[in-house]
Length: 306
Ligand SMILES: Cc1cc2nc3c(=O)[nH]c(=O)nc-3n(C[C@H](O)[C@H](O)[C@H](O)COP(=O)(O)OP(=O)(O)OC[C@H]3O[C@@H](n4cnc5c(N)ncnc54)[C@H](O)[C@@H]3O)c2cc1C
Image (cartoon, rainbow, N blue to C red; front, side):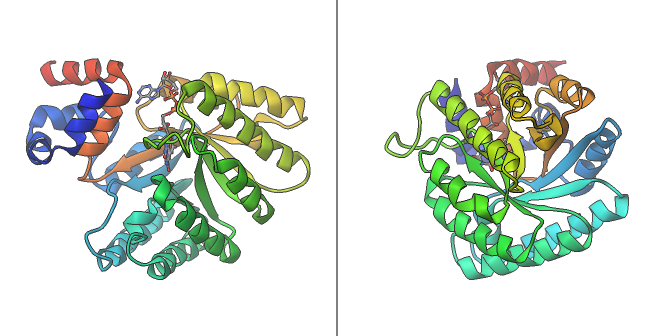
């Protein structure tokens, strides 16, 4: 099933045609409140009333040329202003390749620096997503340079990669903000854990390392980017054993996924943030979401016929 959806995600013929179909547009609404930033912010505003804060990202990855990066940065500057104007507790999350990392690390840094500066001015926060492993080292370097200049920047690290334990040790002295995720990319076994169990136990070990650093007086901002509630609750147990509270870390999940659990965790005193995607480039992204979980396909079909 997963392979079929990954194939569909990469198929140019389907990519051009499927998004035009009204039923496909209707089905994607579960995961994407709309194609423009305003729809995402409106959806985020509703969740904010329930104590679930927002994190906004525009879909899209690698650019065709570096010149496009300036327009992406300008777009996010506008989003930061809109978050501020609406009085939302919102942050932004960006793929480094959207800012041109494939082409030019210096220009990418300049764009990210502009965004972090504006985020600081409006009381917001810039998160840097992690892409496939060939970008791990350049992304870490980008983050280190950004963190040296700004307190309000965070980085995603992937528990699937063998190198992440060392990367975390490298970053902890910077008092970083880390969003720990399992990892969305298929990586070779030479560099990445392949089994769910191994990834999950590395995730827990990395999270505990961050909690121990916090206990020892360092100031990492710890975010668990996962829908795996069992794992979150296991890590909360470790936090308690260390004398820390569940508010000493936060949980980040995606819009439309396990929303019942997001609400429950928020009610039980966890700090919950929801990553809300928007944008026109939703087709490939949506196919990957469907491939992750057969139940979502059933939902999509019901939306199409119902
Ligand atoms: C806020 C956030 C930011 C992220 N940023 C990045 C990033 O920058 N780089 C990166 O590589 N990856 C990123 N990811 C993706 C991440 O790496 C995983 O691929 C993704 O979160 C699925 O794994 P999981 O941790 O939810 O655990 P899984 O083990 O996949 O799932 C745990 C449980 O959650 C539920 N679940 C998971 N997915 C779905 C779904 N689609 N629909 C319904 N239920 C579901 C299921 O009940 C499942 O049993 C991000 C994820 C989140 C939540």
